[in-house]
Image (cartoon, rainbow, N blue to C red):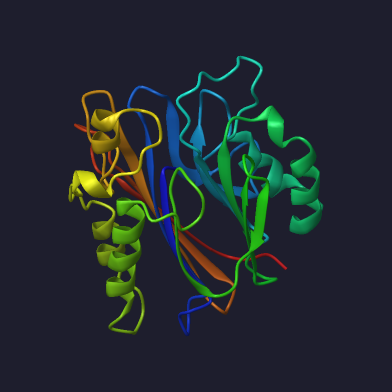
Amino acid sequence: MCLIIFSWQQHADHPLILVANRDERYTRPTEQLQRWQDIPEIIGGRDLQAGGSWLAVNRQGRFAAVTNVRDPRPVSEDTRSRGKLITDCLTSDLSLADWLGQLRHTRQEYAGFNLLVGDIRAAQLFCYNNQSDQLQELPSGLYGLSNSELDDPWPKVNRGKQLLDDALHPGGPPDLDALLGLLTDNQQPDEAELPDTGIGLELERMLSPITIQTDDYGTCSSTVLLTDHLGQVQMHEQNRRPGAETTLMTEFWKIDG
């Protein structure tokens, strides 16, 4: 994932309302949202190149999502796949706190990442950045996460938070079309607002909108994840690759236990 915007413990009926865009090279092989055949307890999209995911949930109500931390330095061939963090978290028998405690000891084996992990039944949500070794248990609030620290005021983060707040402001149940629609926003921010992450102004400009679209890289999918107080989960994923059919995949289920 390259952008995750989420409301946590704010809505009367939906403790988690999360919207996210996955930005990647269009040619990287993936499977859309589904129940994994080899690990049936996991539901989510899948990276077929490294075998992990960018956002997934298990049937017990644990979920995980990852974003890269932008870093122009080359990645070592020995670096472990960040997408495998999703699988490891969702198949672990440890509590989230214990699992994250173990991860902190191996954090340098991965390129830079932000990891968002939660337990819907336990009403717990954590965000961990392996470069700063910053681990936070999040109170209720509206948050944005891209390729830097949580809530760093990048233009796409600020705009995404405002658009999600606007979509939820009228009250009532969240509108799926509105949530998916905000993920298609392509407003280009002013150059003065862009971060300087060491990749040069041209790339900063290209990567700055909520939706990214270039010849070979961009927003490949958009995901909406909703939970309610009855333990029901719904997950929607829309294919956003240029020229592809914009198929909307949907899964509904009730948390086991």
